[in-house]
Length: 321
Image (tube, rainbow, N blue to C red; front, side):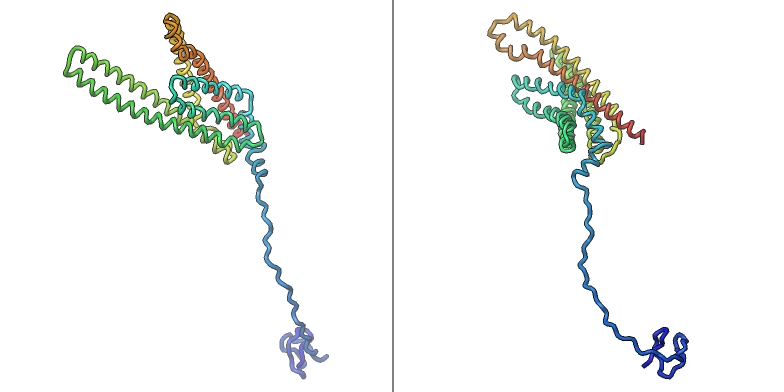
């Protein structure tokens, strides 16, 4: 058996040309090449390349480090203005504690009003420490829980007030339509009471719109912190205007209460010592409660100013992009 020296094809021993490549075989074909056994390499087990997952520190630097939304929040939440606002806002808890003297059931109101106070201090503490996300996110959750509970309670109160006003108004029409004299006067007084109930329902409806705007602001802060986005706060203008109106009404009511309590103290001073001592714990301490309420109103105004500063920084950041 012979083979072509050029292409290695098998040829006859007496062939002069290769039938495959046409090579001249005058020099003679070559012998068969030696069989070489293949060398098999052992197969290595599959080892995937190690994946680099971002660690917690990398996540913190990316979402809460320089150039992030949390840095803007840190600048506002850790400022001296925010600290003063937190101190004044916390003064409202003193008035709630004083309310426990006359109404032990107000402990529920105290626990509810403590939620936004705790939230404000968590924001300040988070802005002053490296653990900003661990403190700020729960702070926003506490504030949201407070707003939702108050929102639901005021919706129920509006419904009850409207139903009560309609019932009273319907009863007064029956009384004034079929009776005279004192009964007719009572019917007219019931109509006035129904109007006052509707007025109270209208005021609570105004507060409901305020809490809706507050929820939008809280959700905006939470989404920016979660996704490291720089979206301006929705309804911040409506929230600010409604807050200023409510604070103004609260201050006006506190001033009226202060004058009324001053007159009440004058009356108590003319009563016997026994009667004076019975009411001293309530009316004599009440002016301080009014004072702490005014301090809380000032704290709320400063907090709104801080939120508007944060929103202004968000608008500037978006314009720079």
